[in-house]
Amino acid sequence: MKIKEFKGGSLSSTALHEEDGKLFVRKEISIIKNREYGFQRWYSQLKRIQRYNVLFPGSYPEILDFGIKGDRAFMDIEYIESADSGIEFLKKVKTFDEVKLFFNELISVMDKIHETKIKSSKNPIKLYFQEEVKQKIIDCKSNLFLNHYKKQKIVFNNITIDALSTQLNEYGKMFESFYTNPIETFSHGNLTLENLVYNPDTNKITLIDVYEENIIDSKYADYSQILQSCNSNYELYNESDNPDLISIPFGLKSFKKLFNEYLNNQLSKEELIFTKLLEISQFIRMLPFKDEIAPKKTIFFYNLASYRLHELIGELK
Ligand SMILES: Nc1ncnc2c1ncn2[C@@H]1O[C@H](COP(=O)(O)OP(=O)(O)OP(=O)(O)O)[C@@H](O)[C@H]1O
Ligand SMILES: [Mg+2]
Image (cartoon, rainbow, N blue to C red; front, side):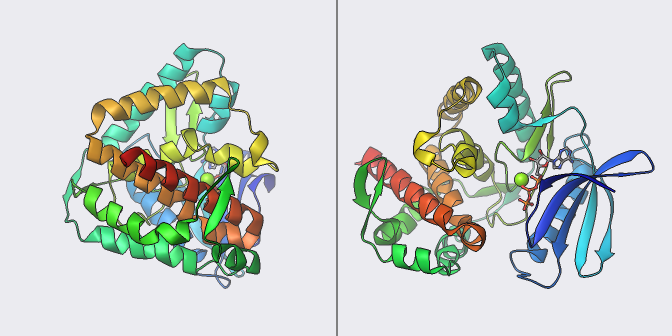
């Protein structure tokens, strides 16, 4: 029996269920509509959670069952009780010490995943740029976006800047020149602050909503998605009807400070720039999903990506 919908939608849904007094999370997906962005992604999640639950005991929920009902595939996932998503925790938390505990736990969970190294080369960055940047723009089909994409200049934060469309070649070249350490690792694949749950009483983080779509699996990819949440305020913008009016909670600000200090200490200048290039790309990779359900958000996140790229190019001059 369904108790609560975490997220609805025509293609997929994530909901809390109860059967025989036991709670579990069910993620369902249509096996008919939009299989590339629907079923194939859902399937990559299923397999990655299964594997990671074995490889990193305690850091990922267990897959309890999966199968098909009518024209929808489902997976049942262990429900992590008494836990808020990372972003919900950071919205509520009152003290810096509590933020620090959460931050330290997140770093230690990430370190475990990134420990396993996989030999790679620089070539994959070209595939990443083609598939995760250029192709994702091609996959946006709404008239609102198609008209907006023709513009040479856009406005963000009240300033007029070059649109991403005019900067794509430069962006691609930057990716190639700053990808200096082509070692892959295991990675989460979708590590925003809403895709982990945290129980402050036990100081335990459980990672959820993973995906097999990084192309280059690395710590930089995971770091860039955390930056997407804390530097670029992804969740706050996503939830807001008027993104100009978001206010940043104390916990998120404190976390941003800790995480940026950490990256500045851990990464070389080139690695840091590469991570920021990936952070920008996170907003481009999501455009086709937004374009399906909320084309206005497509425009907003396209403008945000343009703005972040404008800032980064400015920093490098
Ligand atoms: N195993 C779980 N235990 C506790 N809460 C969960 C669990 N899985 C999901 N949730 C809650 O539901 C929310 C949405 O789940 P999830 O991130 O897996 O899917 P989604 O982002 O809605 O879907 P999509 O796969 O389309 O990105 C989470 O932010 C979290 O609050
Ligand atoms: Mg999610």
